[in-house]
Each structure stands twice: as C-alpha cells, then as structure tokens.
Image 1: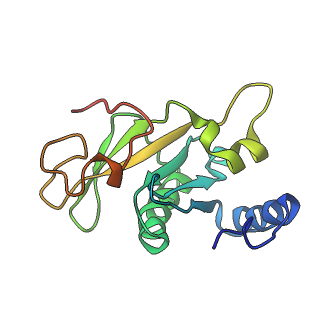
Image 2: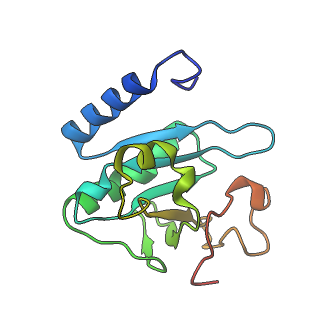
Image 3: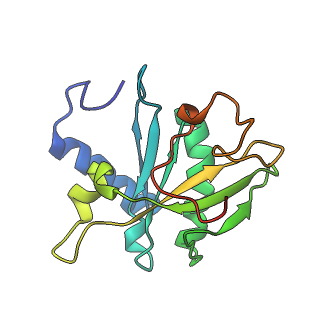
Length: 157
C-alpha cells in the first residue's frame, strides 16, 4: 500500500525521503499500478550528485525496482554519469537503455523536494531488455507495450 493511502502526510513522507537520502544518497518512490497503468518507480536525491537526472523504471514490482535502480544509483553516487541513449549491460546480462523523460512532472515527490526557479528536476528512464536483447518497442516484446510504458523516446531503436 502507498504511504499516502496509509494516511501519511506530505511532511512525514518528505522526512522519510530526506532520511533515506542522507543515509544512502537517494530514496526510491514506488507508484503502484492498476488495471490501466503499469507501476513505475523513481529515485529522489541523485540531483545531489553532480546534478545527475533522477532515474525512473516502469513495469516492475517493488523488489525488482530496487534491484534495478539501486546499483545504478550507487554508480551515480560514485561519479558515473548516464546520458540519454547510453546502453549498458547489467550483471544478469540484460541490457538497459537510458531514455530522457519527456514530462518529469510525473516524478511528483522529486519535483516537490528539488524543483526550483531553475526548472524541473530532469529524469532518465531505465528501459530494460528481454534476456534476448529485445526492447519494448520491438516486435515480440512479452506482454505488449503496456508492460513497460515509455516516458520518452528512445535514441536507439
């Protein structure tokens, strides 16, 4: 259940997120899916490290989300910079591609904490392949496009 649904106030959620950011360098917000929308999750706090965009992933459960975003966030915290169009190989052999998020307003908590007069906090979507290297925009992607919705346009098709 989401924290808002459990009755948490905005201030309580921000305090928890700030605590995670101070302890680990980032926090992860999970937005539950429903019959119409796939779940998605994103980091908050990577803007503290070299002004790096936040990372977003769609279509995964909470455990898989952490397994995807935490190792990448560790790399960012260590000074690695990901750009739209970058393709990387994960430890499990799958590929991920970084896609610029067209409308970062959907990262409500990140914008609430870090957006400023300079603008919105930018984000990159971490798009993952099948074990065979197939992307969600290619034929044969299991479950169709709704299983991993895109928040931007991939550079490599």
